[in-house]
Length: 407
Image 1 (cartoon, rainbow, N blue to C red):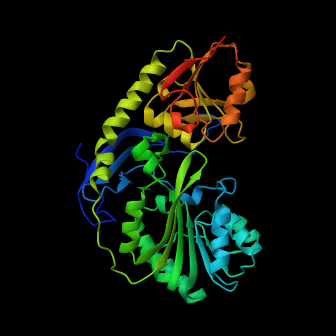
Image 2 (image 1 turned 120 degrees about the horizontal axis):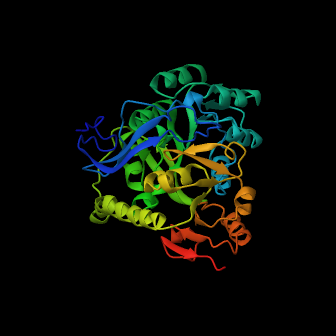
Image 3 (image 1 turned 30 degrees about the vertical axis):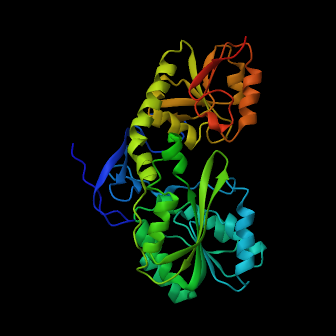
């Protein structure tokens, strides 16, 4: 089947894309089923890269599309430690009467912190009616809609030009990031600032952390691609930094509104091109090795954690057929089923630690090393085999090295 690209590259404008990763059919992420009584919604997962600038995006296919009006998960528990630096910068630059807009305001947790700092002219934009209502109950003005040029005009008509736009973990979900950034440019005052925060895909492409592939992510930005698309959209970067958060890296960007049409495209250098040129073959070799290890076991196979990183890990490595269970204590997960792509049960830590049979245990709960170590201690003498897939996540074992726990 010949695949047609969905349009020009939003970064450099080139129309030639090639497949970077053919991931097969993936279930819609973030779904936990009490019972599985019918077919599980599936999407084809293909990552493609621009032949000129190496920008990576998810290829679009007809089928089950993500509807953010129906996503109601709150994100205040996912607060990075460096967020205090962001608030200190806001306090330093902006006066209390400044107009601040947050795009993708979720349930208003960030807006609450701004209000606690004395900012009263804050506006949220959130497409989920449930999350928008939660913010409104806290007394905030929230537009329950998707941000685009039409909504930008409404904001300017009612509130005027904006001093600061905050956009945290939203840009990677936007199908047309260039138009999105242009609409932000439209509502900002001359010299106004934009703060962006999103995953740094350097770890995915360079370090092969393939669990960072997510069906909700339309775009996979690096410092090069975000710099180019911001310049193309009329912004000048004031500060760009990569910050550690749990098991991954986030890019944090402060960009100033400037004159449009400033972009002079910089081609990736030889090292950058080499990373993308070898990604497909390296990830294929790594997943094949993982499949060999899993298939060679004569025990059950358990995955520690049942969140997006763990389900993405299983889907991208294609080991789902050999997984017996996931271990997670979150209320909305344990006792349910997660699709990888077939349904697998999520059990609690207590259930898993009481299970007498030996397991191949994949230590994939990267943000929670103490929890994993407690499981390892409680399951001592069960004959388990532990697999630490990514050694630079703090494990002493080598990558893809399955180590038998001492009996």
